[in-house]
Length: 318
Image (cartoon, rainbow, N blue to C red):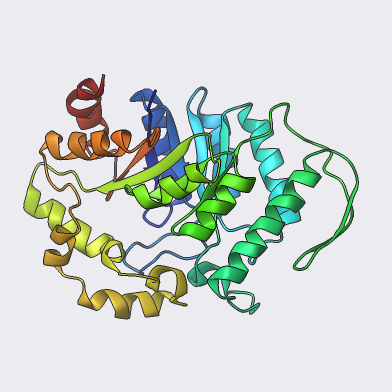
């Protein structure tokens, strides 16, 4: 059975707006929301990047039933895995069984800020595996001393653990990360439809839920949707490793100078008022085995999109 979610785009919205969107998603029948965990937006035009753990605390008090996920945290550089373990335990306790934690190897954009350097991809994946090991040890509720290759923990114990530990869903864009997800994760997190990554995950014994975000830009006027997507989310059209390796917002703004409306259209993102474009993209993802599909509405989801979801999209998915 497929569950449907809505992106809480912390790059585009203030913390109080994200809480308002989460409440709206619950009222509109979404199964879950997923919020990004970044220090910076991709480009200045997006304009926001609140601290995710504070926002999650507010969402826990403002909602009652909707699932809440982080998609995804990099628990390796900017914040030590022991502190991440503490933050997640507290958040999961507040959300009482509604929380899912996605983790990944991160982007230089957010993780360079303390001057710790940005390791190559293979080292980042090794660090992610060791971080997950540290976190799971701390979640056992005992005092932990850990001396690994990348992390040390000295006599640390988390006292306030949730009754139900959250699943750890590992993000993957390539084979090595997909194998790590199969070995150490409770599921797989991707973007779009990546049959190659899903295949590697399953071939290596991976099971559990598969999460993926589908970006779109709904608007009654297709031209306005195209303009907004090009202005607010040009980073979707950046190729290769740029999203992982570019260091600053200014670097991203330089890179997206090459992205015009034609590039957005070529990315095959659903644009405008046609529900079939969105429904088709969801069906394609479900056919690939993705069972947690969440929609990133570029712009304000409360500005008509939630009504559109309830009336035009959700009924077509039953």
